[in-house]
Image 1: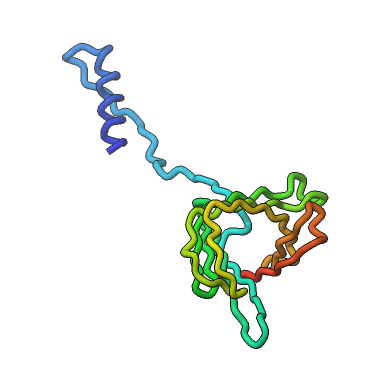
Image 2: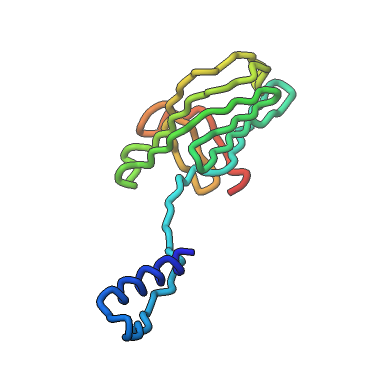
Length: 157
């Protein structure tokens, strides 16, 4: 469609300066209509699981960080959804750990893996992220990422 409009426009512009007796000359039109787009995505994107051991049972809490900055959290019977922002380390030297901000927008208010039942709708959290490797991260309380309290393992890309 764009090629037809472009060719018509070029031909009509070429015909403006000619007389009716003259025949318009062929015009070369670029046909590369496939632009290359480079898109960067946060490295935290994907499904992560955190195992919670409570007495004799083991439960996994899942965090699904989606490309549109939405997060879905599933823990036992609890389902939560919200938005997140991942801010990588400003200089990649990890003198300041990456930051993860999350705001819960919906919580079904059922029991989670820890056995607690609490409506977290509207709750805003900030975590510092320590990357142990490409498949293991930790949620931490400070920007040096040395006071961590939760280990998450990548489940899928």
